[in-house]
Image 1 (tube, rainbow, N blue to C red):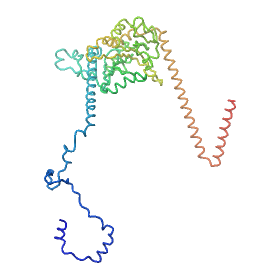
Image 2: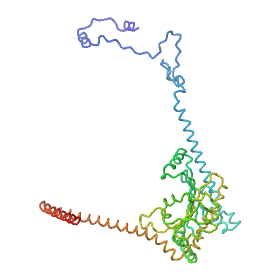
Image 3: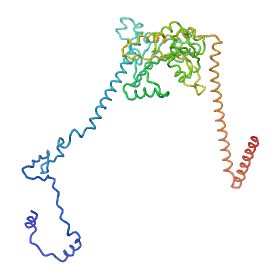
Image 4: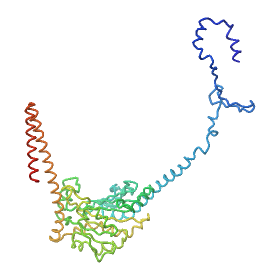
Length: 462
């Protein structure tokens, strides 16, 4: 076919000229190379009848062959996805475990707030983060403005509890005599991450620094301690005067001390973790269960606070009870003098039951109620003899004296560094105003003076 086209269109052959022969001599090295021919993309078949007709691509009007590349079902099989087939079930399982874990924690937190909301609403004016609902016209007309304003109905139940993280929920309450506010924190298992939960559980058996995961509720009540004027916001001067007049007839302060009833299982860990508990001494009490003990700074404090009602609710709570602490000292060891300022508060820690039913909290609900009313007991009876408080203050003053001594040493070191800095600046200023010869003499005198000091030190040591 190639020869045919050449014979039709190339015309008569002419003798090669001398110039072309000279040019061909330059390419003599390539004369033996074969002519390149395009490679065919069509498969070589034994017979034309066995070849399948190619289907053109949509929109393409040329004669390009339709190869196997366009037929995905012919070049891809299920064997090409075996890795994805192994990984995908694990991804789906992790996804559903995460959803189940978070849902389980939400149900458990909701059951706790459902069981404890009636008690909180009875003791506090505001529970949760939504505040109170403004009384409607119908409520005012039916029950009057005063009664409608003190209704215990909240905005929405979901605002009673806030999800801080997937395993931590918090709530808040305020508006009660002798208590500035109440913070409640609920810590749950990391059910949404089973691998981490299992690893943490296993490692807690071998390492003391890793604590075993526990589901607990920790409530902290902050006492007014006679500071209502500084803590209660008042919108007008008239209400400020009314508050001051009321405070003259109300005494919300009590003596500062550290006292606790703890479960013996966590007694050692509690003493290691909390600075305020380290100030106390441990002593078993005959009226308490064998698994509980008292940690107090004074026996007289124990006799005053360990009432029969408290012993009864602790026995009723059983193993769910972890500790009840009345303290005015910081949890962490103070490093500065301003950290030793007493801040009176009460803390209750309870383990949560496995069930998500609100009725599962019946054994611990009386203890939680007693905890909310304990500030009233402290205000009415926690005033002790001067001899008792003198002993309590002696321990605090010893710690404060240590901090004061450390603070004075730090200030002396700072003054020394500041004096050295000023001397260095004064010396550099003198050297800048001297000539080279004067600087050399000045530095020699300094060196001789330093050598004399070193010699005197060596003489004293000898």
